[in-house]
Image: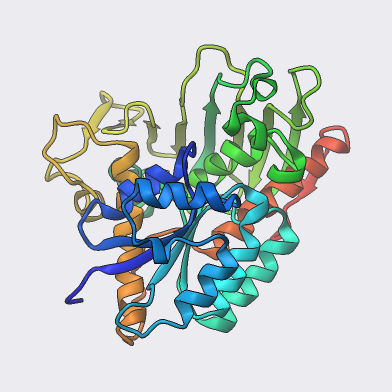
Length: 385
């Protein structure tokens, strides 16, 4: 395109964590600019946040409904190309539905909606409106995650046998939500977070990453979800056994009461010929292990990596890339699709970002795991089985 894409933001105002991350990632390549927003359900806070971001006050709104109505009425040369939704889970469906039906493309944080029923309704709306919908499972944007996926697809591991995905954090090891900490408060509230706590917040990332790298779909699972902090209403720890179509087995562990852990997302995949290992806290590295020769440490930024990994690399090796760059890679791919849609071009088939389908699968995972745990950790078939 001969101009930057224009976007608005719903949520992400003062005191929010993820809104700032999205703004950095969306601006990383200089391809888009934030021009409007409804940054809070509190009108005064929304306008204060808009002032912080030096936006035109006329395009800072009291509510997302006002924003959709006003932005849809603008001439094409000023109208938004897409909106970014960074609200708590219970506030995803309403704005996503309204903006899709008002003619806007949508980027949404995960999980995609409050529950599976909303996710399926939203999937139908995306199909009907034919707009672009991107879900920000950002870890799939890491260069060495893409390298891992490429090795699996090329058959370098052989037939897959075992997948172990762990996501321990420790920040909710105490009742932080009772201190007024905003991020803890909504994530532990079933009225805002949904049916799951840690499983919905970080377990969905682990589930998505395992599927992205392996290419496998879950056939059934057996989940044991626990609430360790007294008085907390949602799970803060989960252990899940997975059976995949094709015979592979898996273990998924997600916890927010793992004292001392920061953000230790850790994936291991073993096949008949080789195994791979990737850690989010060391994102530039991918270990590849064999039965009959020394292990190999593959690093981001080198020519020996596959094209997908090289294309996701932004700076030379030795200069660490991680969380923000992965987010930026998701946005860069999203911009390709949005630019095609805005320009009236036929969509290409090679976009690499999570979609509404991934969002529906994530809610299926949550609800199936919760059902299994409530039945006493029994095996439950996954809905797509």
